[in-house]
Image (cartoon, rainbow, N blue to C red):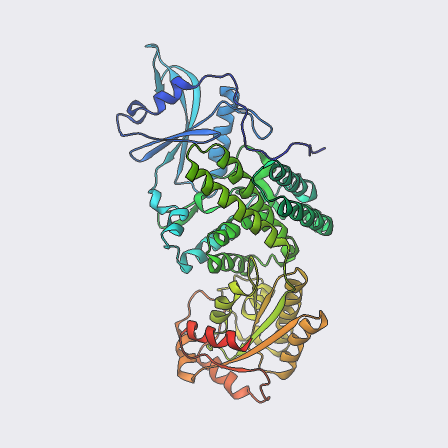
Length: 520
């Protein structure tokens, strides 16, 4: 039976083991074959030293309800597990596990001939400026890089080992109750906000526990990253690289796939990068088709923000500088507000964008989506993507003409309507992106919102023929299969009167978005 009693608290209980001599050695040039200067970074659970092109990571001799690094043997096993887990996503960064040895001279050496007294993970050093947290701070995270990162996460999740003994309602209750307990103990936290968060979080658990268990049993709980924020992603060898995955506690590392992704989405949103956050979740869904878990997304995002709120409150307590303490306190309050905002939402709405291929529907959808609602913004339901998912192929793989026959088209539009409805039922806003040549198609998507008593807006995009042709011919790596011949064919098929407001979309997306906002 799974133990479900411990609380999630990263504050360590240090054992009596003395690692001072080992830490001093690893902080010296001798540990790096004479290279220096040596930089040292201390965390709750590790001491990291860096020099030249290498990094040495020592586990602190600590033990608490999350981990046990008390003995050298346990630290060796933890180092080997860290190496194996992180080589899944960063094999070029994680090089080896080596012993710190006691030599005959009485001194210490790295991988010497003497007896092992401790163990370190050896990593390849990378430029700190390549960290996504630094790129975000400097406003250097491009949409292309964000798309590549979402693809990397989707591929990683697709190959990750299933972990049906973890996740589900029990583990999410453990996270929720641990967050609430810590926030209630934080004297600086707003009492009313914490109480509201507790009520909303427990209600979400009660509402969606069955779905959590269903996903746990069906393979959607896997050995994930567990700590997927911007500080644990870097550019290495020109690729977005996930590193420093959780190795010390399976209960944290083995979780629902969308809960793993939620940390990245939340971190981007909390930094004010709403467009990037929205792009990550949309791109991930286009890649994976994991629409089933959408009702859980608000709670997952809230829990990730609440974790950051409680750790920020803890951090402000140990700051010696008053200004630093105030900054941490402000961050904690902002995270607490975001955690509540993720669960306490306005009624969702549906926006449909129609028009011939090349009129810029998807580009406009992605410009409008981040602002359509609170975190994570609107989810974009693309007919092009769903067509590929129905065909069982990657979204950039081209399909033949047989995939565009009347019956296939009817199936795709039914899928769009079903997915848009699922998004709305999850309490999230949706944008339906399809050509919508037929009045019956436009009526059907409007009915999705009307059936639920929710707001609907439809826009019909129009652009000059030569611009549409230029756009479809310039596409690469996109879900759309349209070319100039498809544009010409679609134009010949517009026979029904368009009853949606018309939007001229031949100019830049910023100008088109301004006009779209005035219409919806």
